[in-house]
Amino acid sequence: MSISQTVLENIIREAGSIAMTYFKDLKNLAVTKKSPRDLVTDADVAVEAFLQASLAKHYPQFGFWGEESGQSANQTNRWIVDPIDGTHSFSRGQYFWGISVALEIDQELIFGAVYAPALDDYYAAEKGKGAWKNGQAIAVSNESNLADAMVATGFACLRSYLKENNLQRFCRIAEITTGQRRFGSAAIDLCLVADGQVDAFWEQELNLYDVAAGALIAEEAGATLTDFQGNKGLFPKQILVTNGKILKQILPLM
Ligand code: IPD
Ligand code: CA
Ligand code: CA
Image (cartoon, rainbow, N blue to C red; front, side, top):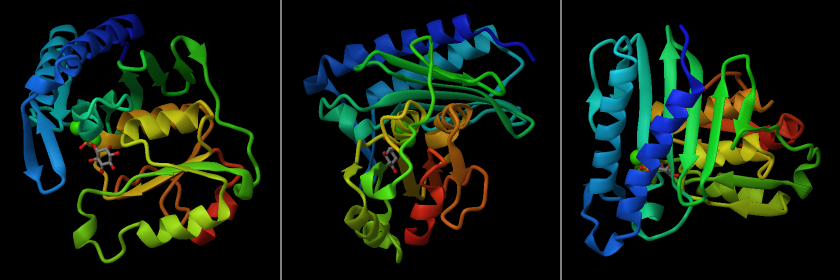
């Protein structure tokens, strides 16, 4: 199942320039609420439509699952796409938002890319071939002491409905760690673990399209992927990604 990194990078970077045309004209951005805290803009819809058409043109054999347009035929071998992860940040002119594209074949993620156009950072990975940022190989950090760690998290849009909504967990971990960040894009959070800017990221109630590409990039960069109990694997509803060296220290706080 050969895919071309160059073809995909060109498609995703072009999607990024479409997003930037909206980003540079935010006063005319149409923003709609999908639910009380979940937004969609005309930029999300335009970027997804471009990605769906371009990916189908180059790889007609694969299906498509996009956050905004849903699932097309062939969900066995499919692209899993979040056109703008971090839509709220995007709509407010902040820089931490990204385009997330993953390829899943028979339930295995084999390709993932996250492009942050406002930062011009292109992260990608291929199963068994490592991870890179702007063409340079990346790896997780060496931080082995949780007390010195930099961590990131997010608060699901649903939090007011959740009995256990991550706020208590955040307080427990913030008491122990040195740095805590809420960047506003799960896809970028995962890439920051992959290139060592962050030592751990966790969040609840995410969807596969939020994390598929970022999870493969983090895993190929040497990260551990577990749920909050330490079970290995990709669990969007309970994702914990670490550099591996602080996993045992952070698990009791989850
Ligand atoms: C959101 C971002 C955010 C996370 C939310 C997601 P979206 O994705 O990943 O960091 O906290 O739960 O919904 O809605 O901007 O694509
Ligand atoms: Ca998302
Ligand atoms: Ca989105």
